[in-house]
Image 1: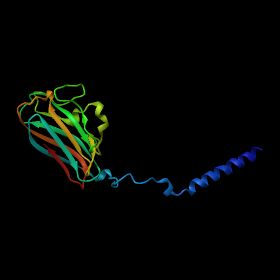
Image 2: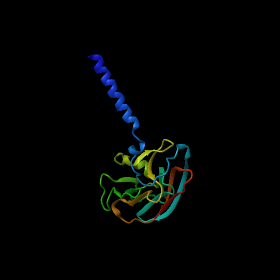
Image 3: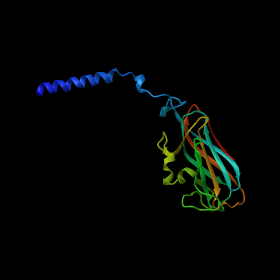
Length: 195
């Protein structure tokens, strides 16, 4: 009786295995999720440093884009002022890959969620290094092992960062330079604009 039961189990296992092996991969694969590019190997990434300047009158948008629909990583985004900041410069909103603004603070308020990028009295600060833990979902390691903000390139990708003086007050203008350290595919063009 035991050997009959064993033969039955072995027979059932063989039938199940034969059915599984006979499935065509065409039945398993789902439809396309939209346009994509082949994955880029880490050896196909390089480092570029970009800069842009503007007159900062209390509000600016920093825009980083890449030409190819592949991830790019911003491991440093340093702001330099030509005079000491007369108020805290805060990160008020960030948008990645065109998916709506993540609002971090409102004009005239100083909520606990605001990100201080340049402290009053200083002439520099780094946005990436200022990111708090609650925004860690925007970050990951770049191919060189640095913590970075990651975004996709291409027509719907990129990063838009809005900075303002804390409290929303208009304080005398200053020359502002943004310097970005970006790890991106070597065959794409990366741009940095401030407006």
